[in-house]
Amino acid sequence: MKYVLLIYQGPTPPLPGSDRWKALSEAEQKAFYADYQEITKASGVTPGLPLGLPKAARTVQVRNGKAEVRDGTYQAEGAGGYFVLEAENMDAAVALAARIPAARLGGAVEVRPAEQYW
Image (cartoon, rainbow, N blue to C red; front, side, top):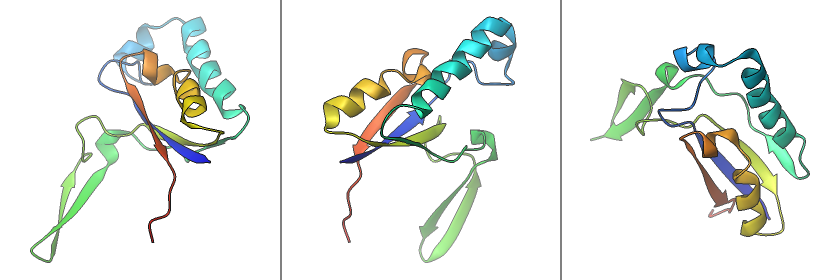
């Protein structure tokens, strides 16, 4: 079965370019990238496209037949990225999600089965 792992960085993880990121040693920065690289090579994983930063997002909602657009993400923190995983079951997907750095650095990973409703 396929699962989508939605990565939410949250307010605390060190995002590249941020002050928290710059405060990390070069070794810590390399380890952060290495953790993500290792996950992209895991069996059954298809990395998602790289997403821009939340500040570059625009949210669109249609109200009374008219599109309303606002700057920023729909949810306060916005999704930082995603993986698609082919796994035997939800437990296997949760185990992989627990390896994603955002899950242990103040963010979260939402795991959803990929299903077709139409």
